[in-house]
Image (cartoon, rainbow, N blue to C red; front, side, top):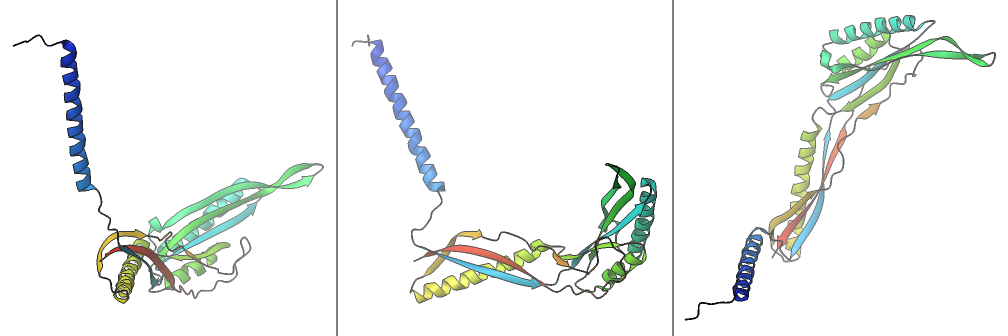
Length: 253
């Protein structure tokens, strides 16, 4: 028996063995991929539907401000601080949690007169605002009305209206989404029945909604910086529509 095999023959056998093993691995990978690859039926039916929930806003947000003028920055600042402290104390007495009271703006700047070809400081103006969140306005707006009235009585000369919104918009959105899903199922079933088809399982679902309910402004009819003489104490929250749009794809047989 001849044992003197040439080196090139061993190299050739090694290459062939390597190719065989590589093909074997690729075959196993392909089989595993086929097992995990999403199975999409060829025959499907897609249906879109919208769900809508009407709800009364339960959260009111108020922006209460003080505009002050004086000959020095300190006079302006002291005046604003005094009035804002009065307003804040009053708001807390109405049962508002301190975490729902936030200073949202504070500024003091000079005002000018143009004389002898130059701008000369003739005084100072300041603006300080406090944002107040009032919960439970879907049940009663009594506290909201008291705060609006009392803010003016305690020195506010700038109220930038009221915005109504929801404490938990996600929960309302979920209710609208469930409604949309049920409608899509019903419409798909009706269409399949009319076409003599059998509706199968859901193979895909997508949420086409693009936004959440936005705060609804409520104008109070007050000027931005003038003296506030009256406020409408009776506030109507109204209602808002929360919508969700769903597209579902069903297998049909």
